[in-house]
Image (cartoon, rainbow over all chains, first blue to last red; front, side, top):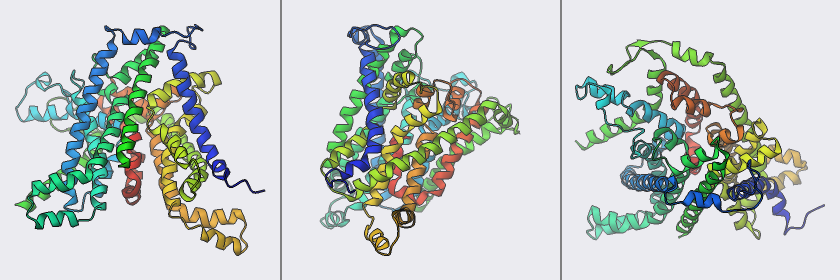
Length: 280
Length: 264
């Protein structure tokens, strides 16, 4: 028996779509339910916004963590985008670097963070080299670059991973464009800077913005890097959310859920913006 | 002079690329490397052997490997029919299907894990291999589907019709035509799924609840307060499969590599 052509595609899509929608739908449903205190260990049945009130109290750690997460995500995104733009323009004139850019896929974020811990901590590799050069004499004299209050270690970890990602994004746009514009501008007497400003930049801007938004959303919502390379106070929003969620004091769990929902909302808004950008 | 800077930059790049494994090796295979010695003076395999002897290390590696292989296989089986219609057919709601399948890549693993934690506790799946495997499908499926749909878009169905006309049965067609023609991207998709699952930390932690241990979990807890030699030894074990995979698939990566990066 042949199925009706109108529905046929959905039979093929059903297995994958079911898994995705059931798991994703259920996880969001339970997240909202627990944030309202409807389910969970405390066994309260009336939905209430008390977890929301607790999370958004002016004195709540939420605001400090939000500021910290916004600072790290924004700074890392902007620095990565700028670095990627320079690297992509440099590489596009040379037609090389393909393999090198993909190589760091072999090292997940967790591994990059471990690398930074080993080389940048106060008794790490760079500190030893500084001592060998006579710049410092004790580990304590080496600047605090990982597990620091400003999130410098976190920034460095993300920049190292995201510059290649954005560079590849920009390079694929640059290599799909006809070279003509650049040559015409050069013939008309445009300087190197003018060509960059008026030809290259407008060409790559939509892709760069879309990619940067994805990077922002990813950094804002990911846990491992700030958990490993951050300090106990201030801590990033995902670290705070998970700490509350896994706290032995079960009354904190709904608050953890509220924070996780805030992170999800921000990520979704950013993803929609990124999709819109990418369509242009 | 200009050439010199290019060579210098190239050299720097290769150093950067080789740095992580070299660094791990230096820490994992040396002993009594104290501040302020700039390089390890005494080499030994004792630290590495100690990590390998810890019963948790090999069982975590085996468990992670088992999960990642199962996840890749399941992802392929689930993705194949979906990718086929998405790549080959125009139909009503195609855009919606794309968007729904794209969603797991933008909802943070943190939120997915915390929500599924409650669901799987109720279903009795928390702390089980089945639960962790199911949860890993969420981040891997979209990328498997995107990769395969891309090659289905260039797939010529006439080869299948030809085989049908020559009297092949559907199973023969699937085995000898469809799978054969898709083999390279099937392999790429499977490897991506493997990498994403192998390096998954949060979902394994939240669903496994400490009962399902994989290498990223061991590495994370070592890095939060272990000694540098064990951290480095665990890192070497953890990056061995990805390094191998990336080295083997360098060519395929130039087409699809950037797609999985954000999950990984």
